[in-house]
Amino acid sequence: MASKHPYTSGSAGLNQAVAHLRRTFPAQVTADTLKKLGIAPNNETYVLNTLRFIGVLDAEGKKSAAAASVFNKHDDSEFQVAFSKLVQTAYADLFSLHGDSAWALPTDKLISFFRNTDHTSAIVGQRQATAFQALAVLGGKIDASSRPAASKAKKGDSLAPKAVKSKATSKISAPLATTTPPPANESVSSKSENTSSGMALTVRVEINLPAGGDQVTYDRIFKSIRENLLNGNAV
Image 1 (cartoon, one colour):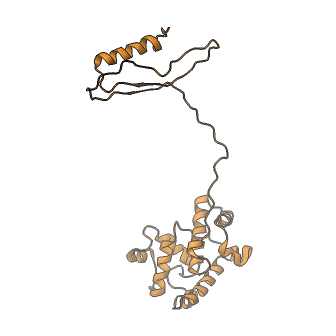
Image 2 (cartoon, one colour):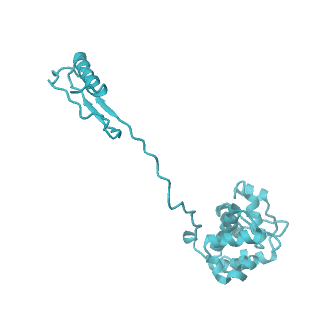
Image 3 (cartoon, rainbow, N blue to C red):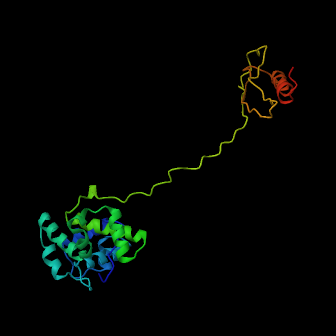
């Protein structure tokens, strides 16, 4: 076709415009008209381009002869039949390739068609598919809730493993209450040694301080740790 297929970022504005035109069709529909109606804010041009593309509006924004009989139909089913014919005529190249199955084509196939036909980018191709699917819903050819969606890009099957750092940690809990006498013994769960093969062992040391210990008790415990564990002076 001479002109590229229209595109839109969403279907809401197009749906609102068609619904309003079915109720009342202004003598001229322009971007200013849609702004006053609060339809498709900041996206008025995309809606107008779509309506012109399918032959609802002429170049001046007036109702076309083909659209006159379509938008005068009050019955929803009759309107959908007539509206879908406008869409099929406008997208003749798509239907000549896929026939009636074009209505329900997966989104990815629609994007491929529009990109190859109009040489558009991925995002524009996606929006062209969105515009066509919105028109298909308005024409009663597909259901809005079951509209085909584009497949998501797959992530790589394999991911590089994350490096895991190993380090010694210590857990010290020292309650503030100081009423119970300290126990007679203090213990350390494990210590770090170097084997004859040179392999380093990393251990986790957990110290449970007595609930009622005083400063002398704490000093005695940490002195024992320093002498027997950290300095390697254990017998």
